[in-house]
Image (cartoon, rainbow, N blue to C red; front, side):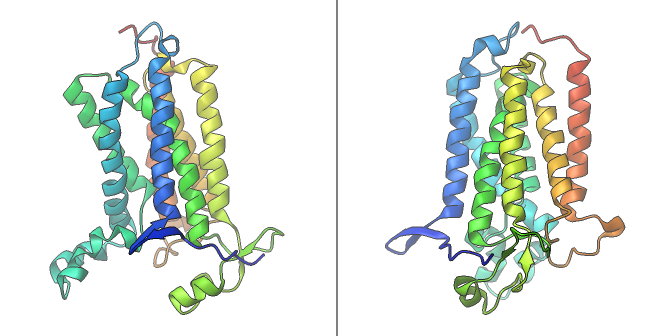
Length: 289
């Protein structure tokens, strides 16, 4: 199947382009905020304790999380995939090149970097407002797959982060007139590839959201601090590690030791941390304050 002629720009207002990718972030944050606010209002889900924050506190937290997503995502991308962007801060020929690290509109965001940024925001907020750290993470974790779902759909529309070559019937050739004009060629080549962005939208987004929804609303695991956060970390790490087998490795990172990819390497600590949090929560009684 040939890649459709998607336009990454939804519409323009004068010189300002409104892109699907930006809207994916907005949709993920707004819908995640809405869902988290419903969890905070559902006192019965947290019994015998109370929700860790009020809805007003959650509104403040969303601002810090948004900054964590954007700054962490961009700085993490440069650190993990293009460290030379940091070098240009000092060696760039002009200010445009020196500040290329901050050029979000050029693309390049890392989930793992965003996770670090969000984690820092949650730790700082919990310390400042003296709320339970793990329970605060349990407010945010169930909403995260919403943003992942929209983000992966935007990756597909942009024709980026494609999969490895394959002969499956639903394979996609990530090459069309728009991509050819933009890059003076097709970076993915005119060969059939896995639409790995859609796999990730389904597994990291829909399936993981369903698992967390069951854990929250049916298994009532919000009563045990860290349980939901642990499930998210382990679930995402496992999903990402599995899907890396069909996702094309990033340029320059194709030959890492043991056949691993950067996505696998970054997901292993997530799985370990998630397993520890699940074991800790499972082995302890519910919170009472």
